[in-house]
Length: 169
Image (cartoon, rainbow, N blue to C red; front, side, top):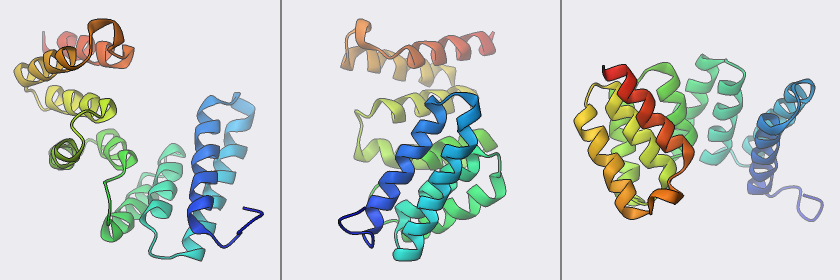
């Protein structure tokens, strides 16, 4: 930032770092880190109003603050500007709000572009299960196990399928 304070992407990166710090911080620092992330998002947007990543960062921060309407508006603005890949935060946001069918279409598109991204695979399995298609969720879980050996399957993937199995009984 000190080299080029007008470079919007560096402000997005700074905001991403503060957002991550908010999740890893002690409870007394969470609000401070979210403030810094939100300020960085606004700075990026002020510098480059057509930068979708600035709006996605803002949506993630607002969603973390449980401002779901503000998050939705920020994500929608970011979606209007998308030139690259869809932001993972949008998928998490739609999952939290229960926009499962809308989310399904977004996840399908992201999976088409990057089929090995484990976070997207997790979202896909969770989305299938919550839509009631446990057969396909189980099949996708088995596909993940074929792609990477059982020992390297992230614990979150294992827990997701376990939770979905419990819910389907």
